[in-house]
Image (cartoon, rainbow, N blue to C red; front, side, top):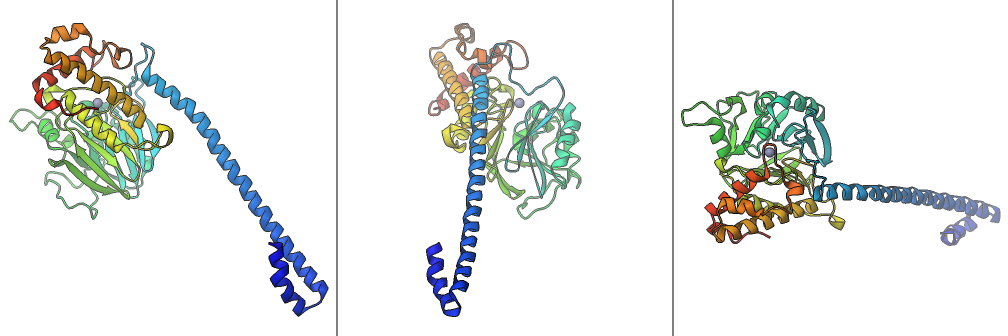
Length: 390
Ligand SMILES: [Zn+2]
């Protein structure tokens, strides 16, 4: 740098003035050069500190990750990973991009917030609505616009009525569909697969299973429904799994999937036979998720998954669970082929090695209930369930 200065500028100043002027100018340029050098050196130091800081953070992050993963792999028998907290408090966890995860309200609630307003995937239990509203209100100045229901089980749709009536639909360019007439202007859109509405509204003349304000008012009956909200594409996929009406939601820019009960690392998958659920459906759903969820370096991070229950997960967590479901499916299918009765299957304990992690003898979804429903669902549709899996 100094050679360039004394070369070109030096000649120029030699022509313009005395040797002293030339030296003075050369001195000025040297100082400038030194200043620039010292500035870039400072920037280097700052950059290195940032890098070191990041590296430090990663060093802390890894043991934490490892800890939580090993907790999923082998929790003590008395630890049940569940967001059905009896403390009655909800907690909002920022995930990435526009997305946060609200835990403690029953099923996990996914929150997408931004300039257009708020979108929720599932609404938790009815009794938790006030706390859910309190937690999401500060996230956007604009109203709640969308609720997407991943299935029609109470811990996912319970808050539909109370939370939905606080919202209002805001027309955007991407809305090319009409909202049903019965929906007042002051109500959020509630999106779900058609069978969810069928069950909630019970159109057979009997009393409806849920109040009308809780019903989906924007159903779909094709494989996929798309939205554009808060500056990102939102893809809603139909996947018959725990019920015949499951949806899972991909937030493309934020790179987060809201999986609903298709992925529930806190227990064996729920198979709601009365609502058309099947073990093979759950496995198909997990396999689809596996194709969409992309891990970052060292199989950590990347696409994040908000499960129906339990903690925030990534590709590695999904792989562990998908493998378990595949193996259990294979065992049950083999027993079914050999013509074993349900009693014989239960006596053979086909999930024994996984029971310390996912099993339960109490609560809403016991190991016994899982084996019962899983086996019945496999025996019912044996022919169609051969070609999938790992
Ligand atoms: Zn659930």
